[in-house]
Length: 149
Image (cartoon, rainbow, N blue to C red; front, top):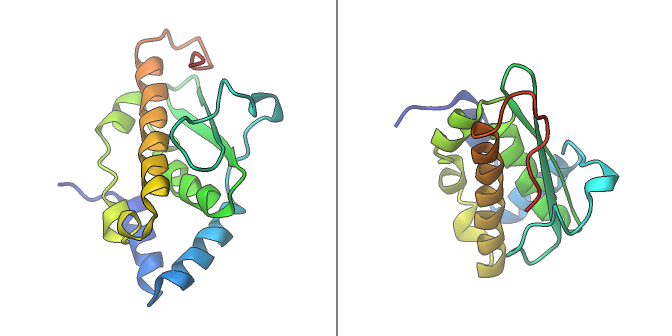
């Protein structure tokens, strides 16, 4: 498995915390840096099914073929989690997104420290982000927005 500098940085950031309460506090801090979704896209067309809380994700592709995500959630920890996913996947091509193994999730212990419903939500967020990438991969580059669900 190849290493990913962004994921390695996230792993290093989380390694300074000894317990999960501190890591949750850090996730809450990370939520502040989340690229916010356009308020017009905070609708059911963009909501992620399978999440305990409400999560909205949108994506655009620039003229260079790179995908950029924005999101929001009504739960602060979930906002922190999606901000990590966006941090890793933003600015990549659709194929790079599809090929990226999100190993940081297990390396920082995130999956094992989530409730079953939050873990399901994490999987649903990843799936939707990959679906956007797949849609962009199969769409002419001049179309800027992925199709709605």
